[in-house]
Length: 572
Image (cartoon, rainbow, N blue to C red; front, side, top):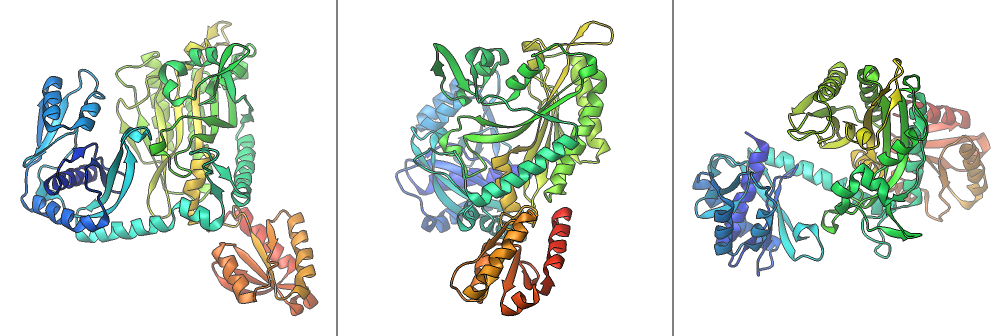
């Protein structure tokens, strides 16, 4: 059974049940999500969890009736007339989104009809187990200037057993929610005075980010990349040439006037990397050029879709662009995919799959180049033995791409790495290199982001490890716990020696008893705790506790150093 059709059909039945139970219901959308479904309603009654039993009972009646999902294709005029009769204003607004020439479809089960493109199951009786979870406010189209709707969330599964498993996974996901853990571990905040979608990295998170960036830079240098630093703003003419003002303006912030010229804050780094390429003539002997940047960009996201670190308005991309000759293209793609896998495995993600998106009907660039680029992407995935799904015609108009998806500790998939060919930008900016034949040629250009954005990656990382980061990433690797104030000076001295060895160390200076200090360190998810009493000071040892293994006994300072160094090196 198609899981998307199952979840979408359950959302459809939810809407039918709400319409049966309440008056004056206006409908918006009810899509399937990665883990369940939701439906957005506007109605006079304020929905609450106390309403869920009655709604679920009505849904069960509709399922037991085994009603068919009937697909009805209508003209635009017929659709508009039907929605006007039903007084479904939000659906009328959504009707305008459907491009001319695309089919307009309704789905009907029983007396309920909904403007919807599907997919659905054949009959309501095929829906297995389900449960309504919560209700929340949601602005229409995600804009806070629009009406607030009521969004009901639910989950659906083929069987009661699968539903129980899904609910357990959902409960675990809630425990791992990066927003919840961020408060508990004091990692980041979003300040209303500054603005939504703008992240403040607190000291503990900034420590982790520094480790990630240091690792990222070192691995890129080892991988044959050079780093760039580029401006945060650029003249309007740059964004006109790149095409962003034509195709991406709604996601760009309003221009600022500088000396009578319009400037835009950058939503992407690529035009700046292209300017570096164009700064002098290039030869085939210069290629390939691999240029990477941790570049901060700003994009306008609707307030309704902002979500912690996962959807923000200002973020730092681990961006890179590769300029190469046609002969170098296949090897560069293979190298890039292999490099991405190394990076992900270093962070503890080993289950990786991919989407390969191919040439759409409307595309720019030579079809032969498209075929060569797509073949190189497919070959790279096959050589690395990565399972992949081909999205035929799903590529951007300017080039095919690979999206790598990583699976986290509780089995959720996150789309992260993108390797994207671009046949548009080199044409727009008239990029060239002098070939071995002495003539001008157009280089291949590949956009590449491994981690995506540092903000979103950090959110995924928090949830993957449930905040209990491995030693090499932990913001606080070691906490020293003196039994009394008499051991404080010795603890401070040891902490300084550990810092000089590049470990991240703190000393618990509180007046709490040792049991409370240990509990506090456990709650802060510190990998190692060193208990220091009079005996340890006298013998020059420490009593070592592990966050995971508990009491590890007494160790000399050198034994401790060796253990920490080994664990950091293994990224265990």
